[in-house]
Length: 122
Image (tube, rainbow, N blue to C red; front, side, top):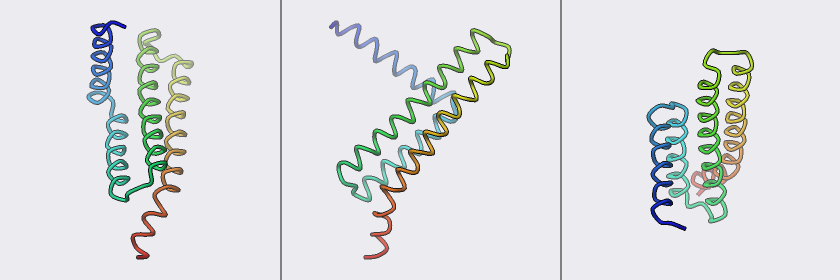
């Protein structure tokens, strides 16, 4: 493996994340939520396996949002005018992210709620 080629790949990934942070409001919101959830996991001292699950869920949602952005941008290039099929694909991709975020939130509640309740019971 060539170091320079790998370094260039990291540079491309960094540019992609910067682009999403600058231009995609939903990605920014999800990053803010991820930071809040990460901070909460640290404050509430989640067990190691709970932290692993939380990190995996955060990465899953952020990756899906980036994929959604890629598909939207690609469709805009391939078929700039909003064709009915393009609109349906974009709506379905938004639904994929939304359903996944809802599932992640449900799992997050199951993980965090006992720790939050424990704070008030003691």
